Amino acid sequence: MDIFLQQLVNGLTLGSIYALVALGYTMVYGIMELINFAHGEVVMVGALVALTVIQALSGQGWPVPLAVLAGVLAAMVVCMVLGLVIERVAYRPLRRAPKLAPLITAIGLSIVLQQLAALIWGRGYLSFPAVLPPVSVAWGGVIITAIQGVIVALAGLIMAGLLVLVQKTALGRAMRATAQNPAVAQLMGVNTDRVIALTFVLGSALAAVAGVMVVAYYNVGNYTMGFMLGLKAFTAAVLGGIGNLPGAMLGGLLLGVVESLGAGYIGDLTGGFFGSNYKDVFAFMVLIGVLVFHPNGLLGSRAQEKV
Image 1 (cartoon, rainbow, N blue to C red):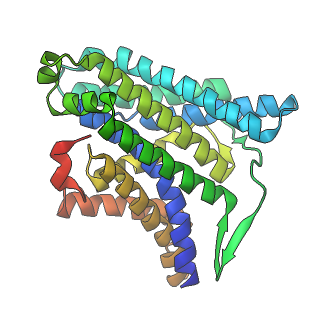
Image 2: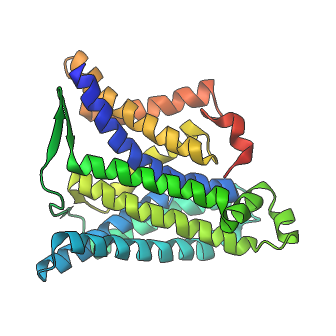
Image 3: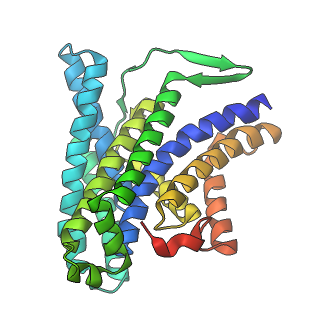
């Protein structure tokens, strides 16, 4: 039971990160019905930009918490600009093209961003400085670290804020109108081009925060880190119901829990046969199961509402 509870905590931490990345996928799909497979690389760029800024400022004597804050802000700015450029250059010209064209473009853009990152930051690993003291809370046999608490709390606040923005603000109403019917939204005075661009910008900002969380949790980052993370976040979005914001959040949390239980709890029961080396298998087994038995996702019954 202690192993189960510990892996549950680890899974919620990992799932919070997956949920933030999955929100970027589901927002873009809800607006454009486009799978932005380059989103994982935006996460990677945000993480590496933050690491670069943090290392540079820490070397100049800045306090580590202040350097981390500056790194997060710099990552958000860079990723927001990158998201805007991606939308303008790669996707806007293909809005009326066959669905296969933007999909191939997204995959190609992902490879391009990954190789550009390798040229800029190299193929090695960048280390993340210790931000929080190694403080942990023990409850029975479960240990919750400070970084886990911060990740879960911050992700929860961001997701709640995003829901409020979509449901209660003028921008959110414009996003929902564009998702339902772009042509009618334009007739009602909604600038759909601006709404789509802002959706990419907002999703990229979330990706930057998620990237910093990943490197803070694992203490390292490199140019390939966005590929598998992007695939898992896409899996989370499909699991919850692609195009549905609450579904993306639920899917991310569930995927993180399933992966952690599969790698830890089930791995222990099988004597290590299904251990951490097989953790990716469990995530994609879930994806296959959902696509076979419930293709619309867990909240697929409301998928027509999109964002």
